[in-house]
Image 1 (spheres, helix red, strand yellow):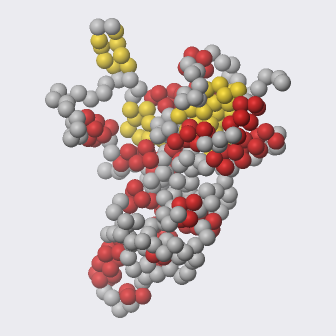
Image 2 (cartoon, rainbow, N blue to C red):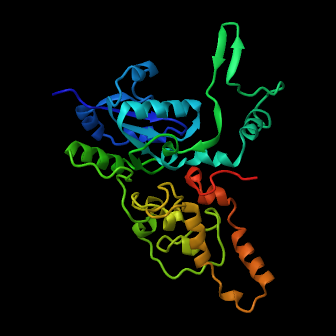
Image 3 (cartoon, rainbow, N blue to C red):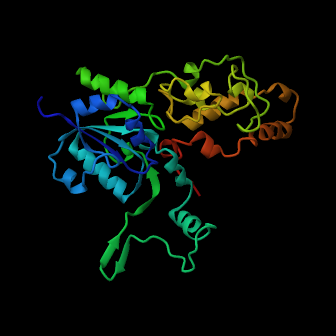
Length: 329
């Protein structure tokens, strides 16, 4: 066998679940081993930074880059792996749309440090010490990555070839992509989402759907939903109507609402705005007839007040790509 093409998987600002999804393809890992040289994967392969830096440009066939760009180290690795890779894939929700880390765009770095290092009940920090980029010690100067004020997706920092959404991407999604690559087929147009369908989670969901007239929204712990009826019709915020399909509707299948981890459906610019727009069209407005403007406002507010965290609900995985992608004072 000739020299096997190199592949890499790197994790920036994320939980590590995307790397576990690689291990979750089970015996397909043998195909990966047989056909590729896994040159860089911090949780599986002990490759050092200087090993990557010394490689020729475009020497890595594919890099699956997961995690958002949260600090200077994340950005440096994104630049390096872009330079060394022929194909760079934004792998997972954090890399594609900023993911949960991008919810921190609602707060400043100063507020984060105060909450984590000073006000946290489990922290004893009498001198109110917070991380510094440079710290001088007897042995010399220590450095830490600079924490950015704004979390960004991978394509907001470097050029990206393809996107694989999900938190994390389902194993079948990764297997389909690997099988396609191994088949030697022509690659899809640059910028494509790969391994997913073109529909929404709502269209993949097998639950029975009727005309929706919602009078009240509920938290998941407040009701035991009927197992066959659309969860949104039962008042649970199910993001399936605004979310890209490809997972097969796994969460609704086990009686849990879709939380939107596959990102905006094809053709939707802003997932949260799409969902809010959808809710506006399914709230029961029959009681509004004859109401004064003040009463209408009160009625709508009473329904919406049961949604406890609008930013965290509608932009849980995509704040970095939202039209308004951070707090505006």
